[in-house]
Amino acid sequence: MSGARFKHFLGPILISLSLAMAGRALAAAAPVKILALGTSLTQGLGLPPGTELTALLEARLRASGIDAKVINAGVSGDTSAGGLSRLDWSLADNPNAAIVELGSNDALLGLNPSQTEKNLSAILAKLKAAHIPVLLLGMRAPRNLGPEYAAQFDPIYSKLAKLYGDDLYPFVLDGVALNPKLNQADGIHPNPAGEKIVADRLYPYVLKLVAEARKGNR
Image (cartoon, rainbow, N blue to C red; front, side, top):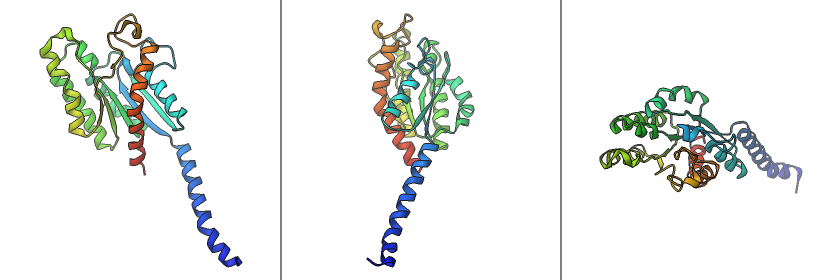
């Protein structure tokens, strides 16, 4: 092969290698950032450091070779109104995706489900306007509030997920709620074993969320 033909052959290969190296460098410099906006269930109330939901999800992602940061924006006792009020501040971290876990405290306080729906809708609308893909974590009303309250509260999440085109995990405490072996003494917050179950069940949904975020960043 002549020198000219060799250079012609080698040129595209070198360009491809350069682009690939640049892409890897960009990925390393800018990991996928996931905002986890929620309550004490997101914050990890009563759990040893490193066993809260956000830490478990981030560790799973990194173990899978995904450069990701899960931002813990959980506030104990927060309502959907509180989450809405601090959303703009939380978005200052410029997340690529969001997990929204709100409404549990609304139900515990017996707040009007229509107001919870209004607040969650405003949160999802803001995230959609910012082109941030969302995983919405559903909640169920405490059954001691009566069937009428549950009938108004429980469908909020599926309704809003459909309205905004977001992914939905129907019940954040699925497989853990009401099991004393998987909850702390308050019977509400998961213990480390329960938290691991929550993270394991959520993980496939979070993988899909990461894929959506990366698709949007192309």
